[in-house]
Length: 228
Image (cartoon, rainbow, N blue to C red; front, side, top):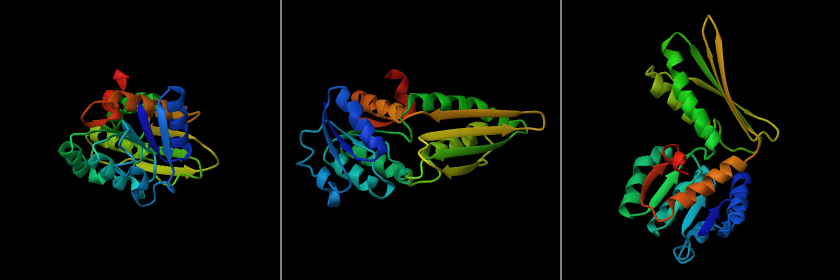
């Protein structure tokens, strides 16, 4: 496939490396390359099959709009736009394209989120909960998108409608560590996912692009990762 990766950060660079290993034809655009939407101009996108966005919250919506209006499928790993979810879903429908998004494309993290869904029942049995997330000092958003997903799962699945507190740490070169602590008077439950590298995120994103090629519709990675 012909792929365009938007973003030359740590994850975007790893995505480009995995895509090249899988023999895809590849273009990579940094923020400088994409000033005023230069990299997502319809003419520049003409031969592109799927665009993968790993940029930043302040520019992701503009990238989505430009690519969708050009009729290009997208894999979006950037967070910070979910309050515009309904508008983006409608835009994808109007332009008959495909978009697949996730806060985290790691298969391991998605297994961890399934475990989180099962553990949410503890909150109905006098357990209190806390979420801790640690990332490298260069990460721009806090809390992480994955931590927010965990918080939403605990609230919605437990039926308590209470948000479990998230505590964020930014230190060193930590790739990504997410923990849930559920505590009662009788015991304490620890759940943890510790990413050793960004490889898992990148592999999931490229597999997602391969899955999305030729498809139309609005998808979330948690609903399709078992098909990869």
